[in-house]
Length: 377
Image (tube, rainbow, N blue to C red; front, side):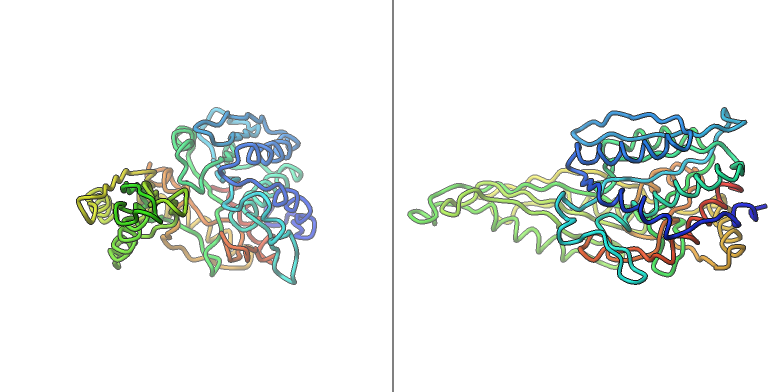
């Protein structure tokens, strides 16, 4: 019975000021102090709702995480884990070119779509349920993490340990473009590459050197040419050289591969680790980085989707489902076999760009969807 949750007085205009505070607290992954400021802001909001809030210290140079547990008559039973990240790809200072602003139905700002908006409406859903005295079907825990945008290298163990204590995982990552939800995620692997050349004076003795930058450029072209319908290969970071008048000794790059099937990603890993330098006078070192396992829906995931669809239809809209690329921490919990539903967050577009925005009209229906799921999942 979800009707009580659907009648809750959600108000998009009332949500926006609180969401603004979250968005204007910039929190790029690699700035642990900035992420911690964001975690403190979210922790306070959760504490005001009556949650028992714990700050889990960060590691590997990343920020802290926050776990908030809400009182429940059956607190000892496996519950619902609402899981999201508060780190963004936007460096501190992005508020200058991408200020928090509203343009009609669009609300702009760094991280507003991916995924502070989704996290915020999840907290708002809990707030409205508590105010109305509506019980959730299971105990609810909120886990907010600090390094998802770089593959969750420091938090995967925490995510998996927490998820193992729960019956259901809800992930308010952005909705699909049509408002659908995510019932599976493609597999993703990252790689670190280093080309090693031979230094020389670029002005006086250019021919004596062997450029690591040139070698890496050749590798980038070769790597991206391996992209097929089954696996994608892309190089998103490259850094090399120190002085323009020196032939570069070192050049570093980061590559990412994504596949719909685990076996295709495993083959991609073999190909990447088998890369060799283009000549005997340069070296190439490839190491495997963070990997997200493929998450394929099973009967329990589809049952959870069916529940969500019925909630959405009761609200007045419909949702489809699909497996998606991009990766999220739902990869981990879904691959563990824990019923996971992803893509429950806001609608919008422009994630990871200076056009990032959410659709204001999606705030209330998506918050109601989350509230309904918390009542019946």
